[in-house]
Image: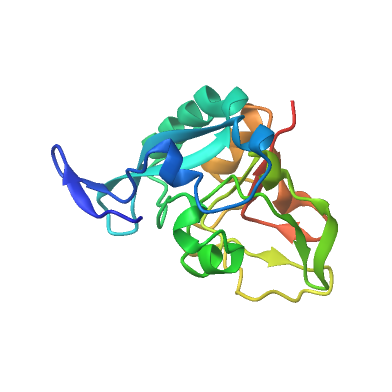
Amino acid sequence: MIILALLGPGIIIDSHMTRAEALGGNRFPPAVLAKMEVVTVTYNGFDHRRHQGQIVVDRVFAGEVKRIFDEIEATGYPIEKMVPIVAYGWNDDASVEANNTSAFNYRHVILPEGEQKRLSHHASGRAIDLNPRINPFVARDGHSTHPYDPSKPGTLTLKSKVTQIFLRHGWTWGGTWHERDYQHFEKMK
């Protein structure tokens, strides 16, 4: 359920789900679901207004993720939206097309050649995709479903304040990999 409403002095609520709503409508392993926590954050929208959204992560990282997004908000960096991926029927492609920042989704690694056999770090709630349509996955041959243009607001580079915030907190950025995944941050420990 995506909710657009105003909270307090001009904060637009993009998501205000209960834990049951944010983790519902699936047949994921109960042991994995038990480890997830819904984190509510505020952020700067592309509309130059403050928004409230939610992201589902491994509860081990919940406090850290909240601090990271507080730091991101302080930079003025714009985020299109942040709604648990259940709102997109657990469909990663639909969430990407909406430029939705998300984390937990019990799914396999997806590459240009198709879905892989190994689980993604998103399946453990230990990976975050930030503005994924404008920070796309780019294959080694340069193929991407969306253009990567570092001059656009919300686009991540190694020197971006946002990238540096995640790196300072010990997260890895996919923008430095052979197959660049500019949207992707992950942390395993």
